[in-house]
Length: 238
Image 1 (cartoon, rainbow, N blue to C red):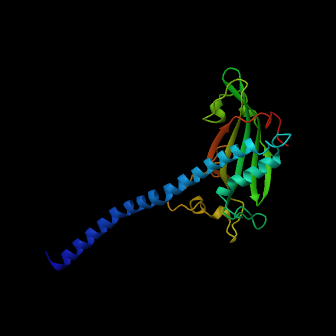
Image 2: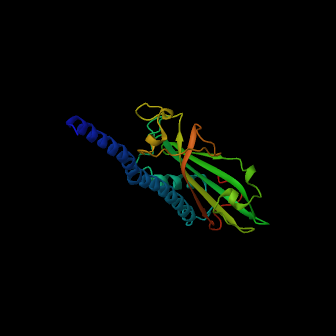
Image 3: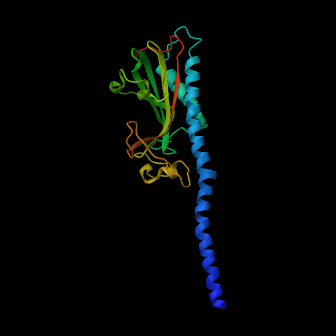
């Protein structure tokens, strides 16, 4: 074999080795960086839901009137989401600016057990934090969640006739109409980049299950608990 043919043979071998090594390298990046990060986001949302439940159960116990108010809910949600937005990182410097592109969304659903193994949502309160400490509340339509199988409301929900449970839905919402601090439009930044993944591109859904809308939810977690007597009833918190 001539020197030239040996050279081309070696180069060919290097190209083949390189071609085989790229998928392995990408797989390593995915499993060593993206998978732990994905798990951490989901664990954070699970922990947020658990904290919200625990604090709601205890925040009013030293008061004569133990009924939970919107102010209680706002304070609890701010505190619980500090695990995701530590310090003052939840604070937006001005209107329409979202430091991370994503922000707090947390929902509370009051559910009553009905005869024949059915359940009904009596009210659904959705809480947003997009401008620092200010919490926005929206009561959403619940007409599609009346006298339904509990799994329609939440896959893990079990409830008996006459029983009351609270479902906490904790998640992060990405707002395409907003801007980052450096002026970039959130709509121009991929979900992969916004959440800090190298390869994984998280799949977005809005609150109705539609993908690729202006407001998309990520890392949704369901936490269900039976509230202490006197905290809630079938009328909306004020």
